[in-house]
Length: 403
Image (cartoon, rainbow, N blue to C red; front, side):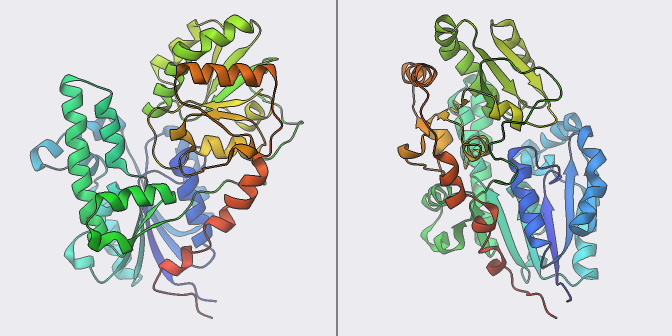
């Protein structure tokens, strides 16, 4: 069988699938590789991931992977002030990537393009590419995240974030208008984007739900962490710990909720699991009972052996993979309504949704005192497995596999 070619552009290498954006991009790549010869262009912004570049050959016909120095990229991003662009566009622009894209499109006569994140749309947004079937996976509304950042700051930072939100929303509308389809990670996110766009564009906007690998994330009492001895009694937060929304969440929990829990349960510990913890997160280890692991080989033992997981997100968009993964392992998850957005699990599953300091404290204390039986895994099996969520993916593309 001859597979048709497909160009896939991703802002961060989609392997290993160990953080939110990479989990989704990896599963899209993996699914599409069954029916298409994928030509993948992406960046690597973490030296740890350089070892995995050759792994991409399992799913891709060809790759163009460009190493990105974050500090240099930030400086280049500031040129957006000169060109009146959102800084995320020059941040992710590369002449080498642009040349490779043009070469692949011409050499392989590619008709279908999947762009993952708005920052990569710049490589195929020009008029010369209007004959292509261009699909953009925005994942979530980036402009709104910048607006949320603005609302939590003052002065020059507030102005900076508001500028990025405004320009990025304008760019999102331009891409939505130019491309064939705009995808989002949940029905809630797609509907929120429709409200921001002109009515003429609403039919171009649809959801493509995230999933979770339920064969990997499943209850297993034999799971044991290899790096460190697990505490006897602990609650857990998982996520990339250089990401502002996660940093904000654990700091809020540590300051507002944790002291009340520790006062009642002196042996209890709070374990923050995730790579590249910021200085603010590392400093939380100075608080009695809080541990920060940094990058771990396998996050599952920490979920499995925890009393429950928390996701106290105060800044969020889309679907929280940390919530899906804990639910898939049949763990209680105490989270804010922002963290549950897009998942919308009913109370009967055991998912506990609360907002506010006192409500969060009460929910955690109730769970510690009288743990509730969990039915959350069945909700995930029914609604959030990758084979189910990606069923409509092939319908988006113009070309089809042929014998």
